[in-house]
Image (cartoon, rainbow, N blue to C red; front, side, top):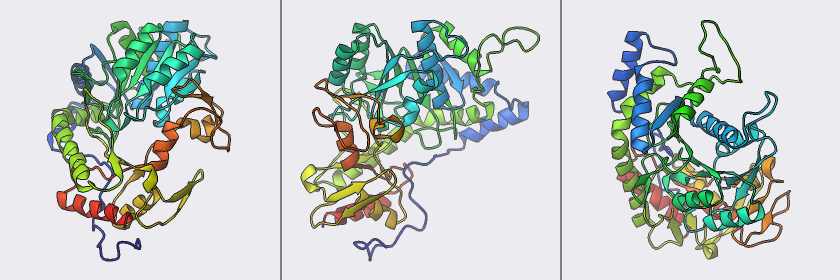
Length: 426
């Protein structure tokens, strides 16, 4: 038992960070796939999910795929071939090309760049939005004016200035890939997240705002690109009576069974957003008076509130040290840190998580450049920072954590979690 909570009884049933919420509509479409025997990667459920996803996201076309990572991969491949032409079979579409990427995100955002032979260059995070910093992106284009592709993610369903990032890309003749995996249903100035990219990707993973247990969609306004992505996703089979292949393909198509779950979930998207918003607002009210702030909401945006997170004020941080797999801290009266808060939450059988560790801090990407809003270039070995202004992404990772945000969490359960967090600062 965490030492500050000896009198707080743990939940009998675990309170998750974010878990699927089923309603019953989903099974109807799954049974339809079963009864009609469309148990493969074709069928009415996939067709309907593609129609619904495109309409909801404000794009003309959607391609149903097995997950969001495959959608991002095909976004990158489409962008690379549009920019540089079809590569030799032994090379990727971005071979040797730099690509500007979000720094504070899940690695699926940018791993497809590496799949296609590209070189990720990270853009630091904006403190006011926790998303890609448009000022740093402009500086990056000054340093590397030949870059023609940007991949920007929207963190935890709280979008930043993707509209400005789009304008910057247009100014420099670059394509934009929007990773809206976490932001389905969120909007910027009335425009849905997923509609800003030349190519965009959304996720239906098991913990997302709506889910199929897996699945994702590639979004585009270009029918030729949509058809090409769909062809790639089915092993690039040509229109011939035998199996004819003229380019590399992938086994990326969405299952018609999973599509049935997603089809049944879509009608509950707004309901889930309202529930997640209520969770965020209860945290905001319940933690009032502590030296913490919740996820920032950028002016003109409407989040989907997928994950509620907090950041501790700098002067209220106790000492905390992390290596690549462990963290330790020194308790201090009136102060706390993410490690302590997460341990406290876990002690009552609830699940929190650290903020995404920035990509330029990851072992596999430590030697890649990260560009700050003053144009400074930093890269890491095992040392901390080499020059430039504050490393915003590293600072948010140091001081922030994600809180239990399950939309099935009761107010009473959340009150107990809030009490545990408050005790960390005693």
